[in-house]
Length: 105
Image (cartoon, rainbow, N blue to C red; front, side):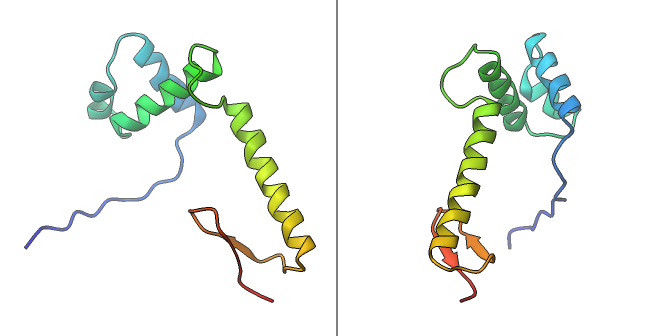
């Protein structure tokens, strides 16, 4: 029988902590080394470093943080407008695959 591994779910890391991890990656520490020493996974640290590079203009393979925030805001406004046009209540649930489901009519 496979063993169950329980992991704690924690909230988001502080921006200062993420910035420090990015600094360490830029100082030639590998994400794998940092993951062994600190709590976040190597993949999370790698993602933070990539996003920081996008924000500084060193990468162009994705959205910068301000662009991501603007997109999030526009999506939220669009969902509100669609809901208002269709007479939906304010209780609208958005599924991960971006379909919109009205839970109360």
